[in-house]
Amino acid sequence: MRIVAPSAPLMVAAVFALGTSHVVRAEQATRNFEIYGFAMADWIQDTKRVDPNWQDAFRPSRIAAPEGEFGSNGQSSLSVKQSRFGVKGTMPTGDSTPPINFKFEFDMFGVGADAGKTTIRLRHAYGEWGQLLAGQTHSLFMDIDVFPNVIDYWGPPGMAFWRSAQVRWTAYRTANDALAFAIERNGNDVDAGNLRLVQGFENATVNPDQTLPDFTLQYRHDDNWGHVQAAGILRKVGFEYQVTPGEPFQK
Image (tube, rainbow, N blue to C red; front, side, top):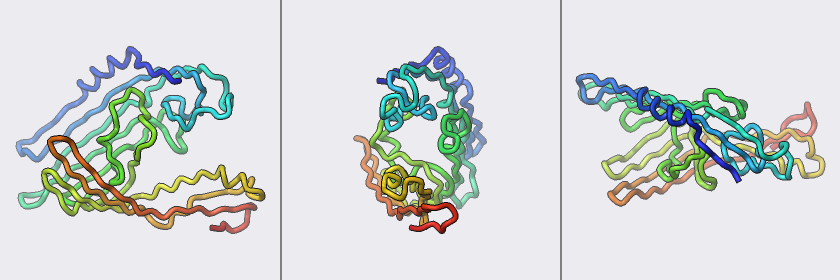
């Protein structure tokens, strides 16, 4: 069981978020610049201890197994990692060419080498000109609109959620339909735990083998009743390992 309770500063954060949103518009309807964000504080009280690097979010895969793996239960944590800041806007490029849309956004939830830290984590950083988009944003393989409204930062398990660096081409777009293709940063996260259960591989060094980027596509239709989306991903996954230090890696 996990209790997630927004503290009093959350009410202040809501006011702060409204106060910081500011739109500057030029005479042209296609030019705008917006600053947005919010400050948020979470108080989480555990009844089951999780990995200390993930104690500020309810990530089920990080709950201790076996009991006591990360220490005693009943721990408390207060965090501002969920706070967010961003800028976005549109810049015209000429009378006969499409405008450039851009977005830069980060929160403070450290992951990867910064797991457990309160530090800047990039969420979005991209520019879009007509049919072309380059930068980091939601993968075409995911549908962010199915993410439910939840209090907890991490959200539900069992859904595709991936923001990646990419080059995207939206080949077809109308008011209701869009078809897009992208080359995206691969996401081959190797869990070497099971390999090390094999005799002779107990101390092996294991790295992901990422020789190709991901190739994704998405078709989406929006209507008054909602939307439907179909997506696909082509990915080459593998790993390389080294049993004895100094030896060549093998695949």
